[in-house]
Picture 1 (tube, helix red, strand yellow):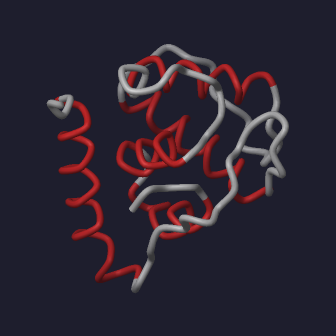
Picture 2 (spheres, one colour; picture 1 turned 135 degrees about the horizontal axis):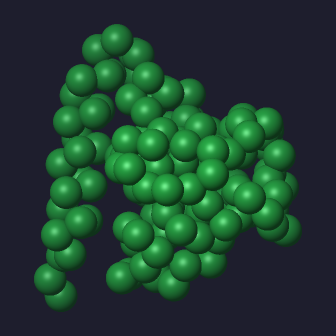
Picture 3 (cartoon, helix red, strand yellow; picture 1 turned 30 degrees about the vertical axis):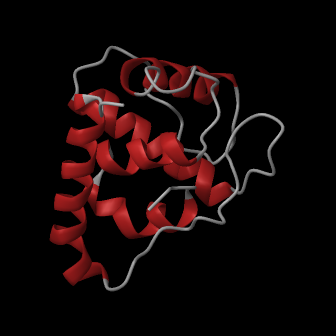
Length: 129
């Protein structure tokens, strides 16, 4: 099975971000035990805040016309819809968009999100690495 070019790019971006940030941030590592973020999940404020902030950063920097999310740590319809848009743009080739932040979506949020939030969000969001 061939690896999709966006997956390769995300891996390179994530590796570069890790190399650039880890000396400053210390020993940030994935939280493979972090819970999913979405409707019906036990959302914690920090994880939802990270989703909102990372989505705002991505949409702004990619020139995506999407209303700015309130970074209030509360998962609601606007955050759900933003996650769907993000998933449809970046990861729907491997998994259907479901509006829930699991490890694959978490990986992509970290890879394409704000490097200054790397350590905080890397520990709050579910990721695979």
